[in-house]
Image (cartoon, rainbow, N blue to C red; front, side):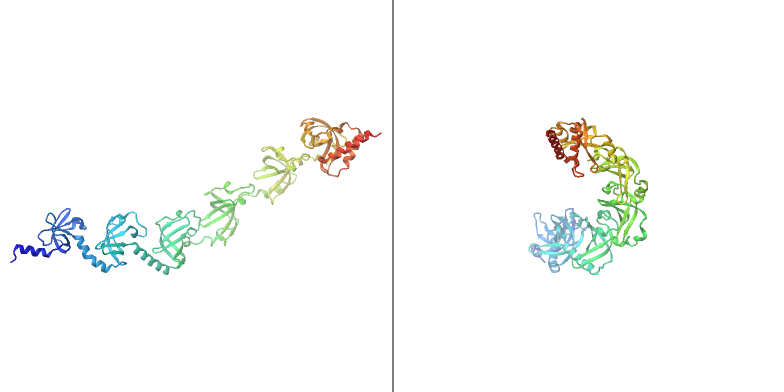
Length: 559
């Protein structure tokens, strides 16, 4: 029989620090568990080494590692986790060489990643959790995943895992399989992964395909977000596959028939149609007749009579309008529309309503450098050219005679339906005084009038019948006149003699100094004037008048 001293000595030789032994739970406390390992004193294990302390029961058998045979209180210090780690480490090294895979449960979130229990504690960096590093690590705690072993440090006894590499590998395998199996025309289920301005990327459960905005709908789309949202499940049509670049083009509208296929049956030239204005551009307005079918109303087809500078002056986006089909080009998928065709063309009846010679009345609507526009009726204007304002006066600008809003009477001169123009004149209301000028004035007549205008070369004098006569600066006085304004003023009454009548140029030459000439003097000066070439401008008569003066002086000096 062993003595007490021999028994204790034998017992101490059976246990050693770092040894793994079996123990029996004899008491469960809130923060620790007491275990009998057959040693002279019980051992203690921290409660946090158990997955759930509430499931631990007295009598449970556990494997423990002896960390210390006796602490200050005489208790054996044990570790359940270290016993498991030591038992599993060699096993893990055998089955999990770097690059191998293993399953484990996420234990906790720590700085930079997750702690994973794979039989021993391993580290999973945040960048290796998923394809996109997650922001909330707590969502993974308690979940079991499969991992790839990327690094083992035997000296420090730590392991680094990657879940991302397994996901990527599986996606690559699935992508390669999909690219092999997939053919154009297939309808595949997918999930909207990302939306851009030019389209959307669709996850086909292994490969991403691009659904371009132009292949989303037969109708007009401003942005893909109008019909899609991230996370949405959709069925798409495979349009094209580039296996070398691993690119897949997808379509959504191709699931529906092309509305242009039977366009001729739906819309015919001359038919009235309704639609919505979807886009305004400088040259016209696009009108949606149905999803995928748009027609263009060119700016020239907006009105028969109004000159529309830009479509937005008449139409606005989203406006519902009616139009007439003018033309259909199925190959180019174009439909021409017109709005003005909804009403009768006023130019069709303009020729009958306004024949040449018709007297009309209207208000001056606009003035330009070349004439004035008079409104004949809604949408129809007549144009009075500056040359058709007066028979006798040279009008430089219509504002000299008219102003906007004036009520004016005129005569229709011509209707040009092709160019949509109506020419009217004011001077044609009266007889051209130059046609009867010989009845009104003769050379030698002594006339009275008022100065109406001054020029550097002379003065214009207003006569009867709305005719102006020109007094050249050389014909003002016997004495030389340097500046006309020094001797004459606008509005001044003068008496002058007619010394020249030019029917071709429609001009009358006057002379103030000749008012007192004798018939002989007048006859001599007239002879010089008659020697001028036909049509020579009266403005250039100074030399002729000077010659006449010199001739008169010589006659007076001769004996």
